[in-house]
Amino acid sequence: MRAKLMSLFLLGLIRFLTGAQARWHGCPPKAEQRIYFANHQSHADLVMIWAALPHELRGITRPIAAKDYWTKTPFKQWITTAVFNAVYVERERTGDEDPLQPLFDALEHGDSLIIFPEGTRGNAEEPQPFKAGLYNLTCKFPEVVLVPAWINNVQRVMPKGEVVPVPILCSVTFGAPIQLEPGEERRAFLDRARLAVLALRDV
Image (spheres, rainbow, N blue to C red):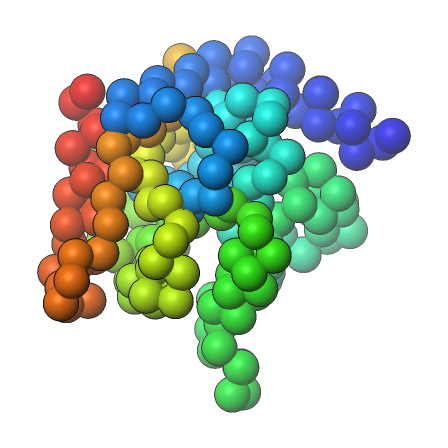
């Protein structure tokens, strides 16, 4: 019950602060297994995409959360676990375990994912080069639909280093799905995926 109430509170708060406008430019919202991949400029990105999805998709879509940040306090850990049903990932490899294993497990379970292929938040107008995770997930799960997304203005709501949000109209634009082409090399695919996200900036 507490998680449901917090979910409703966060939806109302995010929509008040940002409008949380979802723009389905290249595909409709659909209950199929997807990986949404987007630019990353704020800790609010996770919440922004989650709030922009329709109710029926939020229940089957799990955002990726950096374990070291989102488990720092009991409240952060509770909200990412109970409310967002996030998948925790280690930003640094520890031991022999593949950092992507929690994502593999989620996809094998049939979940959809929200990921940020840059890996860390950036301050530039354009996304940083994408890391290999999106490519590795695509190679292992080629049937999962890859949907690019551009999050607009959210870095102004919660700038890096700030703790008090500022109301700013924001939107999430979802683009046409892409797929790994036969024989396409990793860097070529990642560069194309990054351009698919960047192309949504001016839509």
